[in-house]
Image (cartoon, rainbow, N blue to C red; front, side):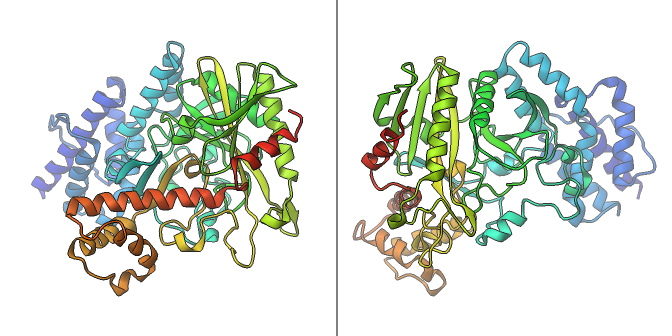
Length: 488
């Protein structure tokens, strides 16, 4: 037993050393923090070992701790995640100290502050970067395609929404600030920083399983429902004034099109340039109301328009005119119905970047209307593509970064083998019949490399067609006519 306890003490000492090296643990707090960790794992004694982290990752050190604690009978393998969260929470800076460190760096440079905060979230094991780096990812035909191995697939929209709700009333929802340090949801390592947007109090936190580099959310400190109005555009521009190297946007505040946490106003953004931000306008015109602003139709598979100006008022006012007009727009022949017994159906998903002092506010026109033929949404991924993506097409995918379910990795590895062997589709993969037919039509025979490339081409094609499914107007000309009818 003495040897087993020695391993426990060594693992604890290595983690405390890691915290001093990486998490800004002050030497004055070392004894207190070590004792806290000992209490959290159930150890009632301690002997110094002088073990060091020796450059090892947080994951490796936690694995050593788990193995030692399970060997000593302190807890079981099923408790690993909960115990790791508790231990890393104790080793991390307090929310106040985190906020102060962020503010110090922000006074020098917004890029320095955000880079430090993101790296701290990784080092404290809140952002699961080691797992994220295992996700397959590639770029093709102007899109970014990822397969998320860590996130469960919700093919039922109701289950997807329930996955973002809490059961007991505290915290009120999964993104409330009261989650910071909340053991009930393993959020002891969650740290947030305060922002002022639109004259109100907001806060920023990173996503533990981010879809892209430095992916996080800005959340209203008030638990108020999601909405998009002129004030929203002001808040978004305030954000990129603070962090001009980031983008920020939000989901349309409607069910079935991505905004599953509709109960709490929030934005999404981060440090990656998404495909939509690289897209140019196919046509544009100067605003009559604001001559220093242009309005254009984006060269994009979905329906998106862009307002560009250095004049914040012009961007906010013009964006809101477009939003209000789209919310009232009706075209029964295309299934666009602004309101019915189920409520509102038209809304915009705004996203903004700042380039050379100019604000580029892109508005993605969305509709969550349904029909007998398309019960999951007329302007959603159509049924033939549900084997690839049935979940809501939210803000991130609408901007060209597709997050596909983890099961596809193994399924397409099998499909690639079938292509190489020239074999027919197996019964287990019968739902891929259309996809497999399109792959087989690409060439008579495949090498392993050719099969892998063909699968990437096909996935990009399917994702492009899904974006086309979400388009509310059939042509760029239709979108331009909509804009020119608004007296902008």
